[in-house]
Length: 319
Image (cartoon, rainbow, N blue to C red; front, side):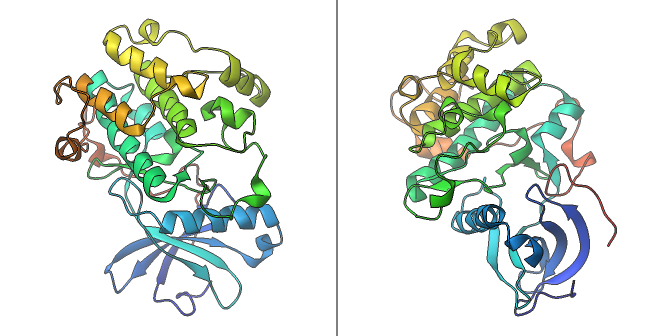
């Protein structure tokens, strides 16, 4: 690959492995912004695979449209003169949540709540401003940055209600069965934000229990459990958490979406009550909420001592 993307001012510094869609990853430098970037490149050879191409471009377009402090910043998406498709995002050092849990163990109630609030806020922003749902909320798509901010990443299978860019994917089951809503399992065509809410509830459960809400040896069994079974009572796995916290998780994990929180705001109000920074009121103090955007203190140590690059499950390659 050339040291610069043709037509764009990004210098390629080194190759950084392979992404989940098979795209090539590069660490680059943007001289205009004066900092490093991550470049995801879909080679011409993969563009003949219509589904992979559409998923990549869909994720690139949706990510570039989102500007929120808890969503990984995307700068540009486009096509090189040689036909390669690329997405440029900010390069962030940090730990993905699955690696964070492996290193530090499960979180306290306060730490868990302070992680979930800003991710819920980011998902609320995506839905309210763009009618975008993520569809892949899991520990592998939540990055804890070097400065302890949770960042939502990987909109590779995101979906927009407003755009017609997902037509060929309608009715197709997509996502990770371990973090999939009942609606996703059924391949419902009218997914909304409450599908993401269920998946965030699965993450909430896991960071307190220390393991996923559902474990099975096949995707089919996992999907059956997501659609029909309740997870083991969280209080049996994390007996120290408050009853109110357990009720919040259980409500997020209701199989029928009309039994979950009616809005992201309603959920965030409840979470704010849990960590003691909001009076018991039906109104959300947005200033208070914004001020609460998290600064996780690492259990038993500092996250800064262990920095990883932007994507999980990379197969590290030479330059």
